[in-house]
Image (tube, rainbow, N blue to C red; front, side, top):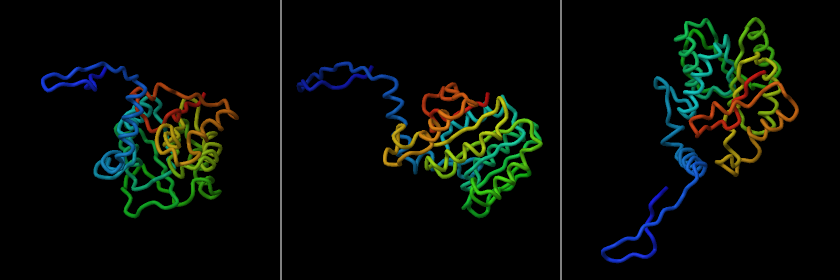
Length: 230
């Protein structure tokens, strides 16, 4: 409940009335404020000084998923400045895991962070040469996790899902990022994006479940984007 001034006021008295605001409305308004304040919030988030464009609430969920599922390899599309790849590599290190992070970008920034568990691939996540390299890397891995965070156009994301979805192992996750754009609830001008790709993919494939438990912190930049392989 929120107390707000009533329109009837006097010099010595303000009449207040209660307005009920639904929790979903509060979450949406905060989400819009957080996303719209990008230069102060998610665009200004770093891991050990390296920028990564993610919400800390989602990063915490990633940590929980990685601890629970213990991936041998994490495939990330969309490197940017390497902050998230470094974050994942440190988590694997902390777990004493001899795992690997493979980060793919068509236009990654120079001077990416070095870590013995990170391999960078330079190229489009959907081009044949890159896919062939990734297939070779995951071939001997028992637990494969995928995070899609490159071009957010629906067609591109849908193509990525069809390429990388089969690589994910049972009980592991494919996370489709930024499904909040195109009005879900932010950036309505974006046009069909990750959310539409997710819905399209799930209509044709029943090998993943949407894990809404991963949205427990109420605000996520990946609504319906946490997909667990059956």
